[in-house]
Image 1: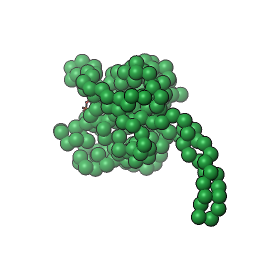
Image 2: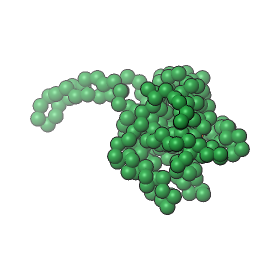
Image 3: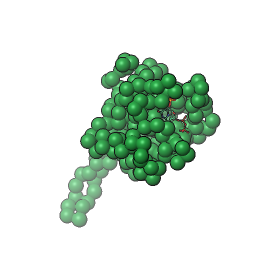
Image 4: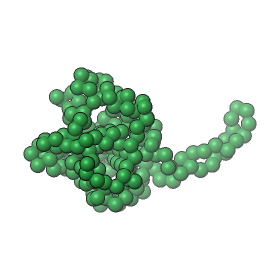
Length: 214
Ligand code: PRP
Ligand code: URA
């Protein structure tokens, strides 16, 4: 297997995640269920990727007494989907972090070279001050993720976490090599890539399965 820096990769392998991922991979799973599962898996990924957010004390009164409660402090969040398939994870993140801003990065993979082509970008103006959760279900060759991270770095982002559902070792190696600081959250590290640069066993084309364009 291709080697990569495992200290910057978190595998979110809760039993519920593994169960849902099994259904997601199954080729008999239809568009509606696939979309729902991607959103649900994004909950678990977001939960893990935000585990270290700082807290501050806040004084409140319950119906019974005064108490000190906690609230999230520090940087605000942005969720940045890589189009199209990343869109499938946005609502899952927003379910947990409703005030997050959303930036969009449009990329498609060339079918022959497998290299990414950027076709759209729109980020929150204050992206440099935000913790960025970049979302894309598939990390295959890593080309799209690398390009997305480069774009965000060039626009001043410093705190970036990459959330995918299935990752290939080749993609992990490429992304972690290209970006010294990013942390990657994935539900699975799969075997590798086939000759068409699809993840094996993977789940097929995530964008097509989310949007029903097979
Ligand atoms: C897929 C996927 C990733 C990319 C992963 O997108 O959603 O963005 O491929 O492959 P890579 O790691 O080799 O770059 P695709 O280009 O098929 O576009 P889509 O999301 O519009 O379907
Ligand atoms: N993009 C996908 O949607 N699936 C793969 O396996 C690789 C790239």
